[in-house]
Image 1 (tube, one colour):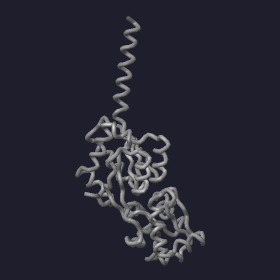
Image 2 (cartoon, helix red, strand yellow; image 1 turned 180 degrees about the vertical axis):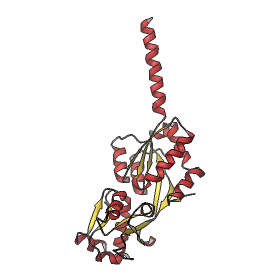
Image 3 (tube, one colour; image 1 turned 120 degrees about the vertical axis):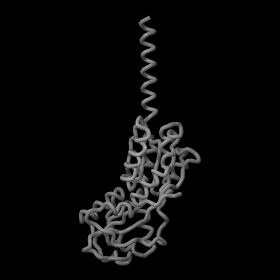
Image 4 (cartoon, helix red, strand yellow; image 1 turned 45 degrees about the horizontal axis):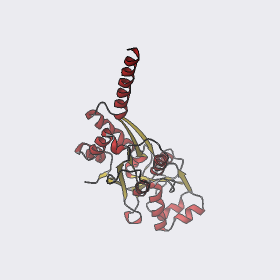
Length: 250
């Protein structure tokens, strides 16, 4: 009888643990969406108090590589469709769930002591920060724009480019005055305390900044994750995105 009792207790504990785990949502989100997503998480939590949301904010490329290597992730948000397609190609994203849900814009920020207004004037600066184009979408867009303006090679040869691990680090460099300026998203620029937008990068020089979201293969069988994925389409979620400067895709 004791053995049977222990068996019942064991399976009851297993059931309870499974129930708790099923409420957990692992979020892998592009660093530029950190603040907006923290509020989105709080909004979702108000409707689903038992859900436990565990965010991982980093560059889109780093997150994609982590997911490929087996890091827990139910929902992936990239700042570039390229990295989303990378995971789609690896069959790590649930088929048919990847979609664009927000847009952003690239700007150049710095202190007013560096009053420039065009990409051509970047050659007059000494230190320019941008996310590493290898992994950071904001850096890829910045490189694309500078190449379009014919200044990237000049700045690279003069060693004026300071590579950051993500767009938020580039913003910090500019806000602290450690560089003359930095390429960041418009939404990030709104968070700066000292740096200001010196100019908006012409949209015709780089691909539109689009944020795709998708359920991973593990997220597709996680009901709370699917609920959060659906929540991102709600009017409440759209209002939060607008509040932080994003342009929702309706």
